[in-house]
Structure formats: C-alpha cells, structure tokens
Length: 363
Image (cartoon, rainbow, N blue to C red):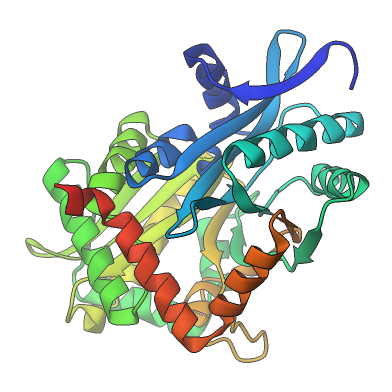
C-alpha cells in the first residue's frame, strides 16, 4: 500500500459521517452499504461492521459488512452486499483491505465471509486475487441477475414502447379503474404500505420483509432525506398496493412492493412502477433497477415475478461473481448441505423469521 493510504475499521462518528458521503453519493453509493440500512438490524443481534480506506486524511472507500449470528453455534455468517465501494482505487490496496477483513472475521468468529454484488469489476477482481494470494479457502458463485431499465437519454414514451403488451395493458387497466398514485409520507401511510408488503410475503411464502420496528427508521430516513419514496395506489380512500424505491448511486432501486388481499384484479403494482419510472426520468437518473431475478429464471420463458419485471422492458444485468471465503470449511460445508435439503430451506426461513422477530419477542 502506498505510504499515504491506510485501512482500518470505521468506528467514530466522524468516520461514519465521512462514510455516509460515499455510500449515499451519486457515483459510488449503494443502499446496502449505508449504516442507516444496516444499523436497525443490530437490535436482532446482527453486527454492522465497516472497513474504511483512507488516502491521507480522506476516506475514499471501503465496505460495510454485517455479521449474522448462527443459532446454537456461537459464530456468525459475515456478508458484504453491493460492496466494496470506492471513489478512488489502487490494486495495491487489495491485500491490505483483505487483511482487515481477516481481522474482522476473527473478531466475529465468522464461519464464512461472503462478498456479493460488487458493482466495480476491476475492484472485485483485485480483491478476489488478494484472497487467493493469502491462501484462503475461497469459492466463487455466479453473481445475481438483475432486471434493469436503462434510462440515460430515454423518454417516457421510449420506455413505454419498450414494455411488452401485457405490461402496457395492465397499466391501462389500472388507469381505467381510476387508480390514483400518491406519495406516502406519514407514519400511518407507511405502516399501511408495510402491511401490504407483509400480505404479499405471506401469500408467496417468503420472509424477506423486515418487521415494522426494523424498517420504519429506514423508510423515515429515506422519505425525509428525499433518497427514496414510498408510492401507494388508491381506489377512492382504499390503498391497494405500495412500493418502496430508493434513489442512490445515480439510479433508482426497487426494494419492497406488494398489494393487499383481493387487489390483484386492479393491477395496482404496474401503475406504481410506471409512476416511479416517470419520476426517475424527471430526476435524470441513469437506470431503474427492479432487483434480482429468481434462481429459476429462464431467459426463454420467464415466469412469475421474473416475467413481471422483464415486462417493463428491463435488460438482464449480471453482477460479478460472489466471493465466499470458507473460514471454517467443515462447519460451512455442513451449513451448505442443510441449505440444499428441502427441510433445510424451511429451517433457514424459520431461523430468519425468528431472527427478525427477536425484538418483538423480547417485548
């Protein structure tokens, strides 16, 4: 590492303030690298931990990790989502960054350390080679595929023409049903949106929606700082559906969405995304990211949620491969085996629910 650069944990308030400027920036920013996204999870036992890289006295990048406790094992699964991020980068810094990752993993007794969704391919390559140079037990897995609508230089009419006929038909149907789109800002409105997301999660059998106590501060921060919006679709006074979209890193990212029971006949979600895309074009954002496609995604015949996302004219973008350091290989192998079993998948979902509801149970 060059003499005027150093890597260390992000610990002080000044460190975090400097990190906010990077993680929320138009160039490098990513929601999953923001402390306001990670900090509420500390109430469930998750440890948000940041490694920063300073060039002289200036923080120029790093990564925010979260260490998730594994019940009955006394260890953690450590993850970095959508990072590392950097305003400045030199390949020589990779070894020192990985050395600090090792220190963090030791302190948190990590079974494995995973780096998912790094947006900078050059940085990702340098970090991967740094892990290998240290002789660590590293695996790579295919990066997630995401549905992204390019907006740079686009018009709303151009985006409309890029949608498939089914999506356009559903938007027209919602408009014909006199649905109204509103921005949700009050505590009650945001809580109603959360209820719609939970209703959809229950119908589809997934548990990725945070409990209200852990998500409310995130929504409040984004709405108040204008880094995100929650849109609701209404028929009269009844809210049918809602979506949460952030505006970080020069693009919009769809985070949560869903509709209340019985609302699907009005196609409320299609109109919500149409309105959000219109706002993104007005802001001059470069893309509208509809999020990950499923593991069962078939480019020849997309189904379900994949079909919904790609119907807006989104292209398929694949993130760089995930880097997974198996720090405790035998324990990690056991966890991998459990994850692959049918019962293991149910167990993983149940553990996730228990983790997220830990605060509520304590109350």
